[in-house]
Image (tube, rainbow, N blue to C red; front, side, top):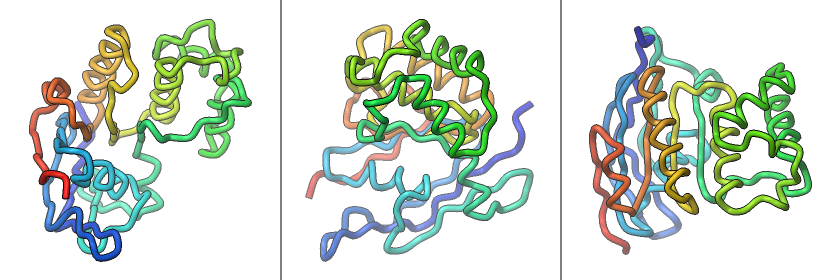
Amino acid sequence: MIEPLRLIVNDISIEYGARRVLAGVSFELCAGETLVVAGANGSGKSSLLRVICGLQRPARGTVTIEMNGSILRPSEALHLLGWVAPDLHLYRELTALENLAFFAAVRGMRCTRADLEALLDEVGLGGRGDDLLAAYSSGMTQRLRYAYALLHHPRILALDEPTVTFDARGVALVEQVIARQRERGITVIATNDPREERFGDYILRLGQER
């Protein structure tokens, strides 16, 4: 049984200077549900995901995460959130294992090499953990971003352009990640690719590029 979990997005507006990209966006998700946020470039999809993950402040509105009937403080909610995006920075001068070990330490996690290798196996990077990230292809780097996001078993997973740079096997990985996430929490996906809309239980369509 999934632990009770709710993500409540209420009246979110996002502005960049005089330009408003989102106005009054609201929705609610419960554990086991997946939302696809669809729209053209510039419609505010990525910004909305960053607001949900606490990486950006909205001009107006609130994001609330509730677990077991209790509203979590922002510091508590951060430990529940996982984030994958094309601009997520990883360290090219480090190996894949060193990247994961660094981020685990930042989160205060104790992970053995075996733990991290198992995670790399899960995302299709088995045997490549000691390679420098500088030697990775774009698709392999994207797989490592998934490993980073899944490192702490997040209850809420935000995926921005989830299949970008992926081949068919990479797309299959995304499908597996979303299916597993349904068993433990919530997924929010931002995309301008109509093929990715099939991942969601619900679709929120944002306005066209302004």
